[in-house]
Every structure is written in structure tokens, then in C-alpha cells.
Image 1 (spheres, rainbow, N blue to C red):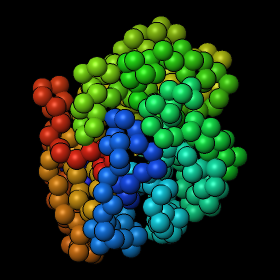
Image 2: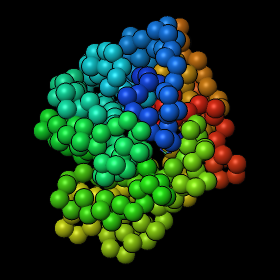
Image 3: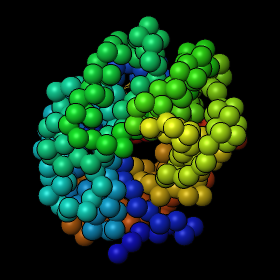
Length: 316
Ligand code: SAM
Ligand code: SF4
């Protein structure tokens, strides 16, 4: 069984947001004072999240990513990981985290069946990291990354949102970081949704200049939405994700579910399909119907995002 949208794109990847809460307050994602905590009944329970993962798997989706908010602050996250692993061995289960809690959580996540981690670190300078995250400590993210390596995670990806005036002066250092560290460091273009709308006009920076340098010095391969370059003698690689300057909609294979149970066929569109109170064949039918609402492309270049949700609700 496989899911195909109206434009022939095969849908193979589910991003499941398990909470909209976070222990950090990144300036482009969370309001300074955080968001109001939803009541228990407003967010998907661990059982509902498991049912959605199972229905998606039965529709042919083998790649599931847990995200948020910060997924590691969600109570029951390890149970959810084990439940998803119990659905099938061939699910590629990954998680995106800010890394702040990985020192304690990396080994339990590995033992609960998580295959891969993406860790978001926007600066390798302690002061800049604090300014971007408002409350975070770089040392926690770095020790969390080390704990993930020690726990046996390989192919770790470091997500870095490129921002003019914040971390653009670190590009060379970040590229140099991949010389001795076997990670994929991914530069991501800032997208104008939620809190980031206020920042984009002054902070948005395209990855094109980085790409020009890399093209002259390395071979490119494609990994999902990223163009990946490995410089000679570097243990790690550099990934470029450019939703703004090079749209990747033609190859988009994703659907997303928010922590309050809405399927989003596209990150940037306002269409949402309610998955709550559904199970079995009804749940599968709702997911399949949602896929048919996936638009051909987003409208970022011509006026911005159509969704009113913030990234902390959708999960990236
Ligand atoms: N809290 C986790 C973390 O930070 O990795 C998971 C959720 S976070 C919303 C997922 C990813 O989205 C992070 O890598 C974050 O940097 C990225 N992100 C958030 N807002 C963004 C924006 N406006 N444009 C581009 N990336 C964004
Ligand atoms: Fe939290 Fe991740 Fe958003 Fe930063 S990007 S505020 S770590 S959810």
C-alpha cells in the first residue's frame, strides 16, 4: 500500500508533533513568555499518537519523526517511542530536539527504538546561542550531542537556522566543525511563519553564497529536502535546506500532525483535517483524504505563509 497525492507525489513521511511546549524560547519560534499550556484533553494522548502512527504505517508511511515544541518535555515520550517501535521494525523513527535534555535522554531514546536524531544548534558561541534561544545554555546542547554519540546514534544532523546579524559570522566555523565531527550540519533558511514573520525582513539570509563556495569545492548529493556536500577530508558533511530560495515542493513527501490532532497536508497551508476521535479504518480514511488536499506548492515567494500556526505547534 502507498499514498500518492493528486500531483503524483508519493507520501512517505509523517511528522508528528507531540507538544507545543518547549524549554527554550528561540526568537524565531516561541513568544518570549512561552505559550499557554493546553489542557490535557486538548492534546493528543500517547494512545492517540500511537494510533495515528499505526494508521499511517498501514497506509505505507515508513518514516516517522517526533517533533514539537520540544518532544523531550512531553510526558510519556519514551512510551510513545516504544509503542511506535512495536508497530513494526521497519519504521524509521527519528526525533528532532534542541538537545538540552539529551544528556539524560539519549540512551533511553536509543533503547526505546529511536533510529536517528536531529539536534538544533543555531550557534556554537555561548553568548549568541543564549541570545537566539533566550534561555538556553550551549553547553547543554553540546553535552547532549556527545551523549547521543555515546549512546550509539550515528548520522546525527545538526539543524542551524541561518540568520543575518546573529550566526552568519559563524558560517566558516560551522563548515570547519564538520572536518573532525561526523555529523551533517544543515543550514536552514528562516521561514516567515509565526514569530519569525517579525524577524524575516532583517534576518533572512539565503544559503546561496554558502552553496556557491561548496559547489566549487565538493560533490553534491541529495538527502530528502537537503542538498548535501562533503568537503575532501571532512568526516562530516554540510546540508543546505532552502525552502525560500529553491522551493522543494515538487519532491515533498511529507504530511504533518499537530499536537492537537490536526493533519496538515502542507506546512504553509491553512487546510487542516481533524483526526481526533477516529480510529481504525476511519482514521486511515481521514489521513488518506488529507493527502488529497496537499497543494502543489506553497506561496512563500508571493506573499507568505497561509497558516496562522507557529512553528512550535507544527514542528518544522
Ligand atoms: N524543539 C525541537 C528543535 O528545536 O529541534 C523541535 C521543534 S523545532 C520547531 C524543529 C525545527 O524547526 C528546528 O530545527 C528549528 O530550528 C526549526 N524552525 C523553527 N522555526 C523556524 C522557522 N521560522 N524557519 C525555519 N526553521 C525553523
Ligand atoms: Fe523550542 Fe525548538 Fe521552537 Fe526553539 S525551535 S523554541 S527549541 S520548539
